[in-house]
Amino acid sequence: MPGGRLTSQDRQHIAAGLAEGLGYTEIGQRLGRPASTILREVTRNGGPDVYEADRAHQATKHRARRRAQALPLMQPGLDDGYGRDLQAVQDFTETLTALLVQSGLPRMMARVMACLYVTDSGALTATDLVQRLQVSPASVSHAVTFLEQQGMLRRDQVPGGRRDRYAVDDEIWLRSLLADVQTNDACVAAISRGAEILGPTSPAGARLESSAELLRLIADALRQVMEQWRQILAARNAAG
Image (cartoon, rainbow, N blue to C red):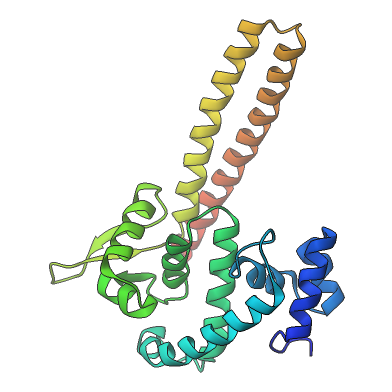
Protein backbone atom coordinates (compact mmCIF):
# COMPACT_ATOMS: atom_id res chain seq x y z
CA MET A 1 0.00 0.00 0.00
CA PRO A 2 1.18 3.59 -0.55
CA GLY A 3 3.51 4.66 2.23
CA GLY A 4 4.27 1.09 3.29
CA ARG A 5 7.08 -1.20 2.29
CA LEU A 6 7.58 -1.87 -1.39
CA THR A 7 6.15 -5.23 -2.38
CA SER A 8 7.41 -7.67 -4.98
CA GLN A 9 4.65 -6.43 -7.28
CA ASP A 10 5.72 -2.81 -6.72
CA ARG A 11 9.22 -3.74 -7.78
CA GLN A 12 7.88 -5.42 -10.92
CA HIS A 13 6.11 -2.14 -11.77
CA ILE A 14 9.33 -0.20 -11.15
CA ALA A 15 11.27 -2.51 -13.45
CA ALA A 16 8.58 -2.17 -16.11
CA GLY A 17 8.63 1.62 -15.79
CA LEU A 18 12.39 1.73 -16.17
CA ALA A 19 12.13 -0.49 -19.25
CA GLU A 20 9.66 2.03 -20.70
CA GLY A 21 12.14 4.82 -20.07
CA LEU A 22 10.00 6.52 -17.42
CA GLY A 23 11.53 8.85 -14.84
CA TYR A 24 11.37 8.28 -11.09
CA THR A 25 8.57 10.81 -10.69
CA GLU A 26 6.38 9.11 -13.28
CA ILE A 27 6.98 5.67 -11.80
CA GLY A 28 6.26 7.02 -8.33
CA GLN A 29 2.98 8.53 -9.52
CA ARG A 30 1.90 5.17 -10.90
CA LEU A 31 2.58 3.53 -7.53
CA GLY A 32 1.42 6.41 -5.36
CA ARG A 33 4.96 6.83 -4.00
CA PRO A 34 7.31 9.80 -3.78
CA ALA A 35 10.04 9.97 -6.40
CA SER A 36 12.67 9.74 -3.63
CA THR A 37 11.41 6.26 -2.72
CA ILE A 38 11.84 5.08 -6.30
CA LEU A 39 15.26 6.75 -6.52
CA ARG A 40 16.45 5.04 -3.34
CA GLU A 41 15.10 1.67 -4.44
CA VAL A 42 16.74 1.79 -7.86
CA THR A 43 20.05 3.30 -6.73
CA ARG A 44 20.71 0.81 -3.96
CA ASN A 45 19.92 -2.08 -6.32
CA GLY A 46 22.41 -1.34 -9.05
CA GLY A 47 20.91 1.62 -10.89
CA PRO A 48 18.37 1.93 -13.72
CA ASP A 49 20.42 -0.01 -16.26
CA VAL A 50 20.72 -3.22 -14.22
CA TYR A 51 17.70 -3.08 -11.89
CA GLU A 52 15.87 -6.41 -11.60
CA ALA A 53 12.70 -6.73 -9.52
CA ASP A 54 13.25 -10.25 -8.12
CA ARG A 55 16.88 -9.65 -7.26
CA ALA A 56 16.01 -6.31 -5.65
CA HIS A 57 13.30 -7.93 -3.54
CA GLN A 58 15.67 -10.61 -2.24
CA ALA A 59 18.41 -8.06 -1.59
CA THR A 60 15.97 -5.93 0.40
CA LYS A 61 15.07 -8.87 2.61
CA HIS A 62 18.75 -9.49 3.23
CA ARG A 63 19.36 -5.83 4.10
CA ALA A 64 16.39 -5.84 6.45
CA ARG A 65 17.90 -8.73 8.41
CA ARG A 66 21.26 -6.94 8.61
CA ARG A 67 19.60 -3.67 9.58
CA ALA A 68 17.69 -5.33 12.40
CA GLN A 69 21.03 -6.44 13.81
CA ALA A 70 22.65 -3.02 13.25
CA LEU A 71 19.99 -0.81 14.84
CA PRO A 72 20.96 -1.55 18.47
CA LEU A 73 24.51 -0.39 17.70
CA MET A 74 23.24 2.85 16.22
CA GLN A 75 20.73 3.75 18.90
CA PRO A 76 23.13 5.33 21.41
CA GLY A 77 24.57 7.65 18.76
CA LEU A 78 21.31 9.03 17.44
CA ASP A 79 21.14 11.68 20.16
CA ASP A 80 17.59 10.57 20.91
CA GLY A 81 15.76 12.52 23.50
CA TYR A 82 13.53 13.91 20.80
CA GLY A 83 11.18 10.92 20.59
CA ARG A 84 12.55 9.87 17.23
CA ASP A 85 11.43 6.81 15.31
CA LEU A 86 14.73 4.97 14.75
CA GLN A 87 13.35 3.11 11.76
CA ALA A 88 12.25 6.38 10.15
CA VAL A 89 15.72 7.84 10.78
CA GLN A 90 17.29 4.76 9.20
CA ASP A 91 15.02 5.03 6.15
CA PHE A 92 15.75 8.73 5.73
CA THR A 93 19.50 8.07 6.02
CA GLU A 94 19.26 5.54 3.21
CA THR A 95 17.30 8.00 1.07
CA LEU A 96 19.87 10.74 1.66
CA THR A 97 22.68 8.31 0.84
CA ALA A 98 20.97 7.35 -2.42
CA LEU A 99 20.55 11.01 -3.38
CA LEU A 100 24.22 11.74 -2.71
CA VAL A 101 25.22 8.72 -4.80
CA GLN A 102 22.90 9.89 -7.57
CA SER A 103 24.65 13.27 -7.50
CA GLY A 104 27.97 11.54 -8.19
CA LEU A 105 29.45 10.88 -4.76
CA PRO A 106 31.00 7.40 -4.25
CA ARG A 107 28.77 5.25 -2.05
CA MET A 108 31.12 4.98 0.95
CA MET A 109 31.63 8.73 0.98
CA ALA A 110 27.87 9.24 0.65
CA ARG A 111 27.26 6.96 3.65
CA VAL A 112 29.70 8.96 5.77
CA MET A 113 28.09 12.26 4.79
CA ALA A 114 24.58 10.98 5.50
CA CYS A 115 25.71 9.59 8.85
CA LEU A 116 27.16 12.95 9.86
CA TYR A 117 24.10 14.87 8.71
CA VAL A 118 21.66 12.89 10.85
CA THR A 119 23.84 13.41 13.94
CA ASP A 120 22.81 16.41 16.03
CA SER A 121 26.41 17.31 16.85
CA GLY A 122 27.36 17.01 13.17
CA ALA A 123 30.67 15.51 14.30
CA LEU A 124 31.89 11.93 14.79
CA THR A 125 35.24 10.26 15.34
CA ALA A 126 36.54 7.57 13.01
CA THR A 127 35.65 4.98 15.66
CA ASP A 128 32.09 6.30 15.80
CA LEU A 129 31.77 6.03 12.03
CA VAL A 130 33.16 2.49 12.00
CA GLN A 131 30.62 1.42 14.62
CA ARG A 132 27.65 3.12 13.01
CA LEU A 133 28.37 2.11 9.45
CA GLN A 134 29.80 -1.31 10.37
CA VAL A 135 32.67 -1.01 7.95
CA SER A 136 36.43 -1.30 8.29
CA PRO A 137 38.60 1.52 9.69
CA ALA A 138 40.38 1.61 6.32
CA SER A 139 37.10 2.31 4.52
CA VAL A 140 36.32 5.18 6.87
CA SER A 141 39.85 6.56 6.60
CA HIS A 142 39.67 6.55 2.80
CA ALA A 143 36.22 8.17 2.80
CA VAL A 144 37.00 10.99 5.22
CA THR A 145 40.28 11.76 3.45
CA PHE A 146 38.43 12.09 0.15
CA LEU A 147 35.66 14.23 1.66
CA GLU A 148 38.13 16.47 3.46
CA GLN A 149 40.05 17.05 0.22
CA GLN A 150 36.77 17.99 -1.47
CA GLY A 151 35.97 20.48 1.31
CA MET A 152 32.85 18.54 2.26
CA LEU A 153 33.84 18.01 5.89
CA ARG A 154 36.41 19.36 8.27
CA ARG A 155 38.75 17.65 10.72
CA ASP A 156 38.73 18.82 14.36
CA GLN A 157 40.40 17.50 17.47
CA VAL A 158 38.24 16.05 20.21
CA PRO A 159 38.37 18.52 23.15
CA GLY A 160 40.80 17.29 25.78
CA GLY A 161 41.92 14.35 23.67
CA ARG A 162 44.22 13.34 20.88
CA ARG A 163 41.65 11.83 18.55
CA ASP A 164 40.29 13.59 15.49
CA ARG A 165 36.64 13.93 14.70
CA TYR A 166 35.02 14.77 11.40
CA ALA A 167 32.32 17.40 11.14
CA VAL A 168 29.85 19.03 8.77
CA ASP A 169 28.48 22.53 9.28
CA ASP A 170 26.37 25.23 7.59
CA GLU A 171 29.27 26.25 5.35
CA ILE A 172 29.98 22.79 3.88
CA TRP A 173 27.86 23.35 0.80
CA LEU A 174 29.11 26.92 0.52
CA ARG A 175 32.68 25.65 0.24
CA SER A 176 31.57 23.02 -2.24
CA LEU A 177 29.86 25.67 -4.37
CA LEU A 178 32.97 27.84 -4.22
CA ALA A 179 35.03 24.93 -5.55
CA ASP A 180 32.48 24.48 -8.35
CA VAL A 181 32.69 28.17 -9.24
CA GLN A 182 36.47 28.03 -9.37
CA THR A 183 36.34 24.98 -11.63
CA ASN A 184 33.70 26.70 -13.74
CA ASP A 185 35.90 29.80 -14.12
CA ALA A 186 38.77 27.63 -15.32
CA CYS A 187 36.48 26.00 -17.89
CA VAL A 188 35.27 29.41 -19.11
CA ALA A 189 38.85 30.61 -19.59
CA ALA A 190 39.86 27.46 -21.48
CA ILE A 191 36.75 27.40 -23.67
CA SER A 192 37.04 31.11 -24.49
CA ARG A 193 40.64 30.57 -25.48
CA GLY A 194 39.54 27.69 -27.69
CA ALA A 195 36.97 29.91 -29.38
CA GLU A 196 39.70 32.45 -30.16
CA ILE A 197 41.97 29.76 -31.58
CA LEU A 198 39.26 28.23 -33.77
CA GLY A 199 37.89 31.60 -34.79
CA PRO A 200 34.73 33.11 -33.27
CA THR A 201 32.98 33.15 -36.65
CA SER A 202 33.60 29.46 -37.36
CA PRO A 203 30.95 26.86 -36.35
CA ALA A 204 33.30 25.30 -33.77
CA GLY A 205 34.36 28.66 -32.39
CA ALA A 206 30.77 29.87 -32.14
CA ARG A 207 29.79 26.66 -30.35
CA LEU A 208 32.56 27.11 -27.79
CA GLU A 209 31.74 30.77 -27.23
CA SER A 210 28.08 29.88 -26.66
CA SER A 211 29.15 27.29 -24.07
CA ALA A 212 31.38 29.84 -22.35
CA GLU A 213 28.48 32.31 -22.21
CA LEU A 214 26.27 29.75 -20.46
CA LEU A 215 29.01 28.90 -17.95
CA ARG A 216 29.51 32.59 -17.17
CA LEU A 217 25.79 32.93 -16.39
CA ILE A 218 25.96 29.88 -14.12
CA ALA A 219 28.99 31.27 -12.28
CA ASP A 220 27.33 34.65 -11.78
CA ALA A 221 24.18 33.00 -10.42
CA LEU A 222 26.20 30.83 -8.03
CA ARG A 223 28.13 33.85 -6.74
CA GLN A 224 24.85 35.64 -6.04
CA VAL A 225 23.48 32.61 -4.18
CA MET A 226 26.65 32.30 -2.10
CA GLU A 227 26.52 35.96 -1.12
CA GLN A 228 22.86 35.65 -0.13
CA TRP A 229 23.71 32.61 1.99
CA ARG A 230 26.57 34.42 3.71
CA GLN A 231 24.18 37.24 4.61
CA ILE A 232 21.64 34.75 5.97
CA LEU A 233 24.31 33.05 8.11
CA ALA A 234 25.58 36.41 9.38
CA ALA A 235 22.07 37.46 10.38
CA ARG A 236 21.43 34.11 12.04
CA ASN A 237 24.68 34.25 14.00
CA ALA A 238 23.97 37.83 15.10
CA ALA A 239 20.50 36.83 16.30
CA GLY A 240 21.83 33.77 18.12
